[in-house]
Image 1 (cartoon, rainbow, N blue to C red):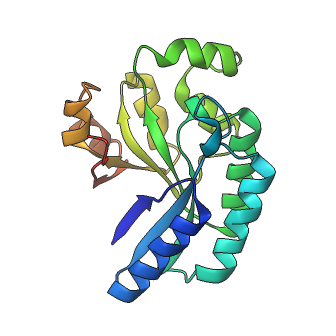
Image 2 (image 1 turned 90 degrees about the vertical axis):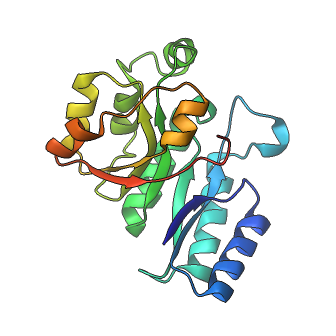
Image 3 (image 1 turned 30 degrees about the horizontal axis):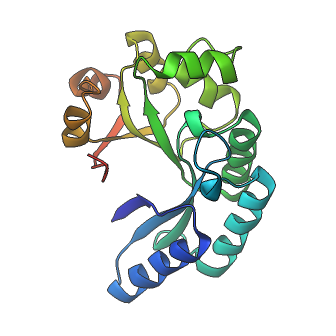
Length: 193
């Protein structure tokens, strides 16, 4: 089974589904959603992004085999509106919402500028409706003990990416602590690392 971010391109995401189908693998694939703080050619309005996701869902979604996922890349490149629409679309269609949850020092100023109401990164996802029992967070690093403990009550999972986390100096995930708190953890990698 693979759970992956495709790209911001609907065509490339469509090709990813074609290849997964040909290979006869179980795949959860999402078009990357971004509407700010990235090169203009990768940005898309929330409304257009959800419209394209819906078309991919109608074409490819086969529960348990080939699933369209909702992939806001991470809060730095997503507006509050995009996160709200992504969360709503995921909940309404019982889809996996797959995003990055990691905290590095440079993110603090972005969080304060774009989400001044948020006390921490986890709250951004909670208050925009992006956390469900089908939410999958990549990394989960740099959070406080309180945030990790809060995560256990959400029933969201973490894709632990140790090689990427070390390569990018993002810190280590407290796997034993999270397992004791019954947080679902899978093993992953981030191609950037």
